[in-house]
Image (spheres, rainbow, N blue to C red):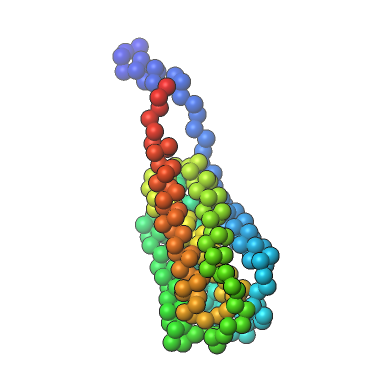
Length: 218
């Protein structure tokens, strides 16, 4: 055996086999569905949804389209976050399309300041919708980061930001059914707290990075 072969043999002698990565799309869908269920249950436990909100989804096509666009945007960003935890699984085009969907959805509420999808009303107003959105998002962020941290995110901060955006927007979206519908209120009390969770998730990921990058002391 020459020196080259001997070196390779010595380096590989104690290497443990690396398990294959999980089905990342399935993992993202499981997290998304469980997170959505968690949010819906908590919101209903904390108070009733706006009277007639579900009927409005049937009777008001624009409100339905607005809600479906939000759902699609959140799901796409969720998929982007989990794909970002596997090297090579996330393309720049896939990531950019998710951000575009998110911007397009949020733009509906800016447009709604002039031409709302529903007649603005204080019916169904929740006293603590801002705080609820913040609180319900945090367990979703922590659970998602625990999952992606077990994988191999090459850009952990961006992955955490995408995951936190999806987590923050889930309760923000459902608040359009659970709370009053008024575009300025939606932007300041539902969307804003959801967006504030993005730097929260990024900060958590920054604290985790030294642990991941810590050299082996043995």
